[in-house]
Length: 342
Ligand code: F6P
Image 1 (spheres, rainbow, N blue to C red):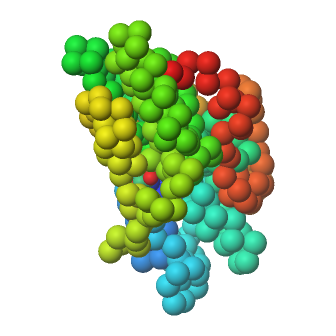
Image 2 (image 1 turned 180 degrees about the vertical axis):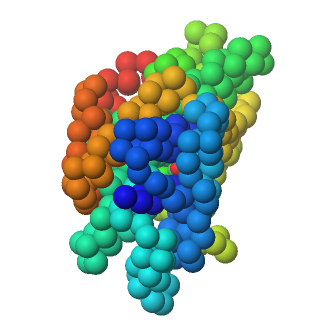
């Protein structure tokens, strides 16, 4: 049995731990051979492979990024792409493919399974934790820890200067990182994409903090929008790679707060720092278990499935369950955090 492995979409701490788990279990317990495909779906599309055996995965557990490389290539977007993927997998003698990715990468896997019967097993990945059908994705815990540490550090500088500090975290469609790091870091305002915010209310919260001689920390997810957001912000523009670039809500918000309250405000955009570096212990644990269970699914011939975390169990669900809709923050969960605002 030869199993292909690829990692697609934005990188995420824990990808290497998954790859290591897959290869260690596959080789040691089942005698499988592996082929790594470079840069997500670009690898199978162009027949670009990399050696994947026990020596290749040695020492990679704590390393961020992915030894396989990643991209957002979609074979359905190029002429004859699906046929080329099929031909290249056949040329490599690949019997089954483990696809580690987010919504887009797994969406391609689900379509290829449905349309050409590709024997595929999915592993969910995103720091945003916005994939349905799994309680957590690896990478999220690391991102939350990085953001929390940043908020802790920003509290002291905010207090020293009595400034408002706005912290922009990742999360285009879901506010999981903002909510978790904001609560963990003791933020005074948390703004998420699921709930359009009222600028007057935000400024009110900011002013109430100053009244008790505290400098407020405002955590804002990159996809958060003001109530009259259509007037001031666009959803994003496409860059030359076709990726959506959001329009800097953190900077905009700090400028608005400064103008309306007269308090000095600064913005810190955490950006890709949240995706970089070594994974947390939780993410290493989760990613490793996902890798081991993905091999079990291949062994059982249980294709078209994705491994998922339910409480502390790893289960299998149809890949489509994860990609059909984004997992957003429940309004009640967000409301719970409101006691700390202002
Ligand atoms: O991995 C998801 C994510 O981190 C989003 O929160 C973010 O908007 C996006 O990826 C940015 O990715 P890139 O800069 O690689 O396009």
